[in-house]
Length: 102
Image (cartoon, rainbow, N blue to C red):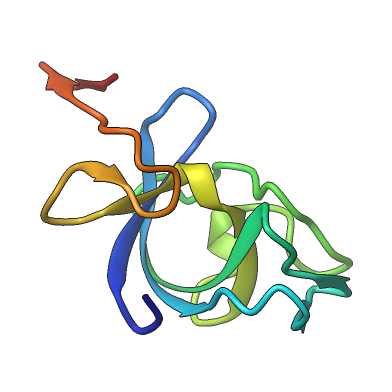
């Protein structure tokens, strides 16, 4: 699962960034907290919505634009596999209707 290209979604299931999954090791510490089973570590390569808020913030990073080329935590259920249009971790399929992912 690591080094896989993915898309990050916000709470409205809109794409906010294109990334690479770096780690899903539940014991690894990223941004001052363990990844656990809720998050994964991603590296942001490209921001689609640069002002979108991060799920986990720290002293220097509040929005997607603050985290480009750095490693952050993102909620696993909001990590979308590029080619399959499905969540990488939850097993739920996400379907696209017009510009909306469901």
